[in-house]
Image 1 (spheres, rainbow, N blue to C red):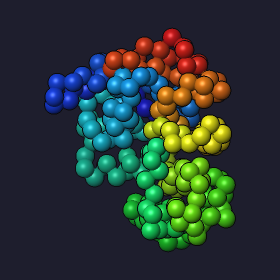
Image 2 (image 1 turned 45 degrees about the horizontal axis):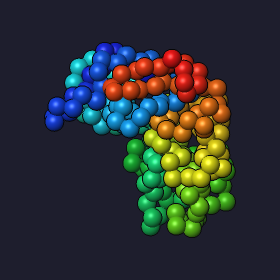
Image 3 (image 1 turned 135 degrees about the vertical axis):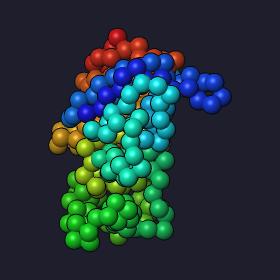
Length: 225
């Protein structure tokens, strides 16, 4: 579960990115986080992944209180969260398999676990035939599927996707969103930051609208209030 209570974030330059927001996302939910540029979406994502701390208020993610988290708990928190970026962030000199293996070794997975988990995840994202290829040999949509596989490979409780379709054409964007929907149906909590109104409205999911650091809408559909 994700819970924010009266969360504020003021940066060192005096900019208020979040202004006392409260939000609960239950285990297994699928939530779109939308809003104009500068509304606080990126700040919220950084809070959820432990990259930054709130100026005040409480942030709890998968049982970890991020305002009181110890250094030794941060790797455990990050293992419980899979993050997908707009620009894929794959290692160009490593194959698809090696990219996923690297992510698993980073959290201490055993060679046996790596050998069994990677084929399962690649099949889930439809890339079981691409394990030995390099990122530059893949299409943009395939690279994003590798990024999704990497986010899934450590079996996280929550997937956070930051503009995962921002570099893709409409057909590939819909394909990626359907894949994330399927992952959610398997039990993983999914939180997606996006600006693509039409894409959001193709899915009857919860939409949280941020404007000027405040939550101004929370319901089904992009225009929910």
